[in-house]
Length: 319
Length: 215
Ligand SMILES: Cc1cc2nc3c(=O)[nH]c(=O)nc-3n(C[C@H](O)[C@H](O)[C@H](O)COP(=O)(O)OP(=O)(O)OC[C@H]3O[C@@H](n4cnc5c(N)ncnc54)[C@H](O)[C@@H]3O)c2cc1C
Image 1: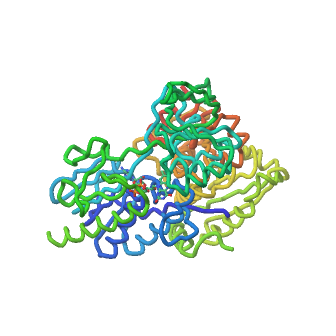
Image 2: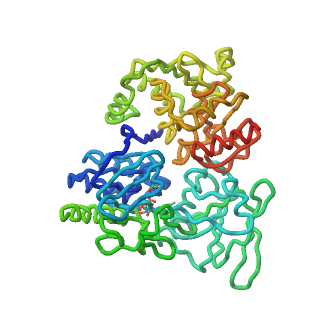
Image 3: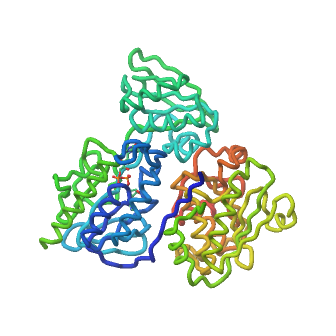
C-alpha cells in the first residue's frame, strides 16, 4: 500500500526561547517531547532530518511493546511526533550546528538563528560506523551502503555481502531477501550476535551464507564493487566473495562531534549520565543511543526520553 | 479510500492558505503498465490536493497520446509530474512522489504558490548567475529519509534560474534507467549527464558541485 510521509514544519522559528530544547527527534527526543508537553514545559524539538531517527530507517520493528504484529519504523515515529505536538511541543526542522550549554541560559545555534533555552536534552543518537578496509572510501555510495531500506531496491537479484551479524545486520538481511537471495554475512566474531529469533529466521533462507570469525580486508572493483576479500582469523586464509553491493552494520558512533569541550564525553564520544540522565552540566540531560549504556533500542531510547523529561521538570521547578 | 488522514488534510489546508498564485500540476501517465502501477494512487493524491486549495490546478495527460505536450515540457518518460506556475519552472518528478518524497511535493507546491525563494540568501545571486544549461537528475527511493533535501535543493535552484532543470527520479520505477547511470546509493545527483555526487549536501556544497561541473 502506498505510503505518504510528510515532515510537518511549523512556522519558521527565529530567535525564540524555550524552557526546554530537545536536540534530535528520534524515539528518545520525541518521547521526551511527549512528557515535557504534558508537564506544560515550553518545549521545542530540533530535528535535522525526519522524525524517528534511526528507527525511521528500519522497515519494521517487531519488538516494540504493544504492536503484536510489529509496527513500521516510520509509522511509529510519525505517531510519536503527532503525540508530542498534541501536547504542545514544537518540532523545528533544522540542524543544530553548535551549542553553548554552560550557565543558566543555554544557546542552541542553528545555521541562521539562535534559540535560547533554560534546559537541554541531548538526543542526537548515533550514526553507522564506517567500514575501514582497502577500497572502502572509493566505493562509498557506489556499492557500499549503510541503509538497506534506502538502497536495497537498487540491488535486485544482485550479490550482496552484509558486514556484521548483530541485530541490525540480520534484520536488514531478512529485509533484503525480498530483493535478492544471494546474501553472505561476514562478521569478525566467531558466532552470530543477533537475537536468537532473528538467527532462526535468517537460517531459514537456505541460500544465505555466513563467514564468521573473518574480517573484511578489501573491497575490490574498478568502477563498481566486484568482490570482497575477507581474511579468516583462524588460519589467516583469504577468500574472495563476489559481490555487487556491500551493506555495513558494524556498530554506531554517537553524534556528539559538534558539542564543545564543556560537555563531558567518554572515549568513544558517548555522553556519561547519572541515573536521572543528567550530564556533567547543570540543566543538560542526555537520552537514547547518544549516552553511555549497554542496550540501544527504540524502547530504551523512549524510556530515556521519559526519564530525562521528568528530570528537566524537577530541575525547572527548583530554579 | 482516502490516502490522507483528516489531520494531514487540515494541516495541508493551513499550509496552502494564502498562496498567491496558481500551482499547476501536470500528470503524464503512461501505457507501460508496470511503470504506472501507482498511477491511480497519484491521481487520487492530486484530487485530494486540489480539494484543499483553489490555487492548485491539476491536468492529466498521456505521455504517449499527448506527445506534443510532453515534448513541449521535455517530458522524457512516464509517469511524470511537471510543476509550474503560469510558466514552466523546470521542476519534474519521474515516478510518483510517494513515501518521503511526498514532503518534497508539498514543499514545492508551497514555494511555487507563495512565489517564495527558499534558497539561502547568500547563495541566491550565485545561483541566478548560472548562464549555461544545467540538468539535475536526483535519483531517490521512496524509503530514503535522506533524499527529500536533495530533491528540494535541486527544485529550489530550478525555481531561481530558468537555465536549471531539475528532475526527481524514482530509482525503483525507473530501475533500468537508474542502472544505466550506475546508481548504487541514493540520493545520487547527476549533473549534466556526466558529473555526479552522492548524499544530501547542504545548499552551498551542492552549488559548488554544480559550478565545478559546468566549469
Ligand atoms: C538498521 C537498524 C535496525 C534497528 N532495528 C531495531 C529494532 O528492530 N528494534 C529496536 O528497538 N531498535 C532497533 N534499532 C535501534 C533503534 O533504532 C535506536 O536504538 C533508536 O532509534 C535510538 O533512538 P534515539 O532517539 O536515541 O536516536 P536516533 O534514532 O539516532 O535519533 C537521533 C535523531 O537526532 C537527529 N540529530 C542528530 N544530530 C542532530 C543535530 N545536530 N541537529 C538536529 N538533529 C540532529 C538525527 O537526525 C536523528 O533523527 C535499529 C537501528 C538500526 C540502524
